[in-house]
Image 1 (cartoon, rainbow, N blue to C red):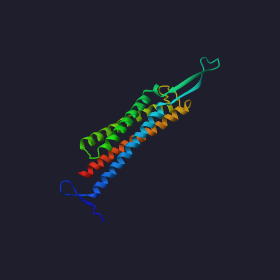
Image 2 (cartoon, rainbow, N blue to C red):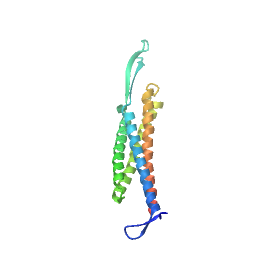
Image 3 (cartoon, rainbow, N blue to C red):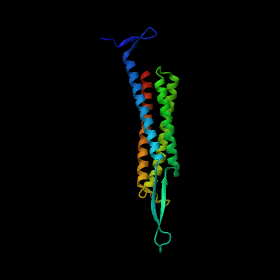
Image 4 (cartoon, rainbow, N blue to C red):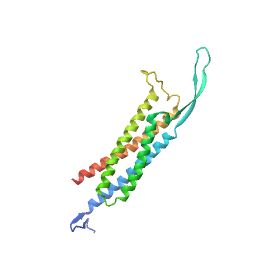
Length: 193
C-alpha cells in the first residue's frame, strides 16, 4: 500500500491529499474556462448573425389603404447589442488566452495566478454589464414603453427576439462560469490561510 505522504524538495513531508486537491481544482478551472469560452463565443455568433426582414403595413392617410414596407431588424442597429457582442468577443478571447496560461502555469506562479484571477473578475463585470444592457433594450422591444410612446416590436420580429433571448441566456451562462472561477479562486485562497 502506497503512503499518501511523499518527501518534498525542502526535506519535509508533503501530503498527497493536498496535491490531489490542487489537481482537482485545476481540472475544474480548465472545465469552467472552456465552458466560458464556448458559451461566450456561441452568444456572440448567435446575436452577431441575427437579422430578420418582415413586411409591415403602414397607413399614411386614414382614407387610403396601408402601404406594405419591408423592415429589417439588425443587431448592430442597437448600441446595447453592439456592446453585448463586443463584450462576448473580448470574454471569448480572454477565456482562450487564460485557458492556455492556466495549462502552461503548472508550477502555480503567484503572479500569473493573481493576474488571471483579477481578469476573471473583470470578465464577470464586463459580461454582467453587457447582459444587463442587452436585457434592458430587449425588454423595451418585447413590452414597449407607453410613457415615451415606443411600441413593442417582438410581435413583428419574433425570430430576431427569440435569437437575442437565446444569446442572452448563453452569455449569462458564460458570466456565471467566470463568476464560479472567481468563487473557486477565493475559496482556494481561503484554504491556504
